[in-house]
Length: 188
Ligand code: PAN
Ligand code: ZN
Image (tube, rainbow, N blue to C red; front, side):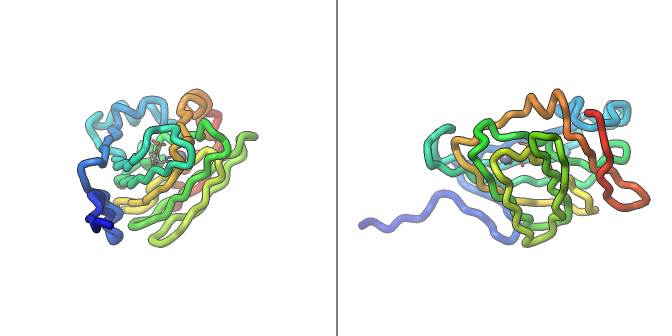
């Protein structure tokens, strides 16, 4: 058997992926219309502000039965109004496809919502491991003053439904209230 080096590397101290198969995407304030509650504040901020960036490693085609994908998400510190910088959030198209998130650096909150629109959250800190059942919408907010980095592993069959969240949002949002993160009821 030939012995080879893997072409893909994960820096376990920083969460960063490297290698030529890694895909990169950036989400700036200009890409996140309608995601935060306070659209006025968002429009008054620099549209080029980077909110989060994602590295993805997808060694098989999307939809491959039994395949796994890996990701690294960095959320920068900041707020739109009083709402923490966060990911768009999504349901998986395949409700049987669950996912792991684990926090590498920083502090934040994993916000979860079931199909009855009930919301709860888990604190993220370095080393915290989060199992996300396949039918639960998920988004992450950075509640700290440093960047929040988390890694993720999900199935190649999962698929992403962003439309439901774009249209209905989560039923609770994470705001800074009195200097602390608090979930607050929201209509969208
Ligand atoms: C993650 C997310 C990533 C970015 O890899 O896709 O953190 O968040 P949004 O996709 O909500 O913008 C994941 O949950 N994959 O399934
Ligand atoms: Zn997901």
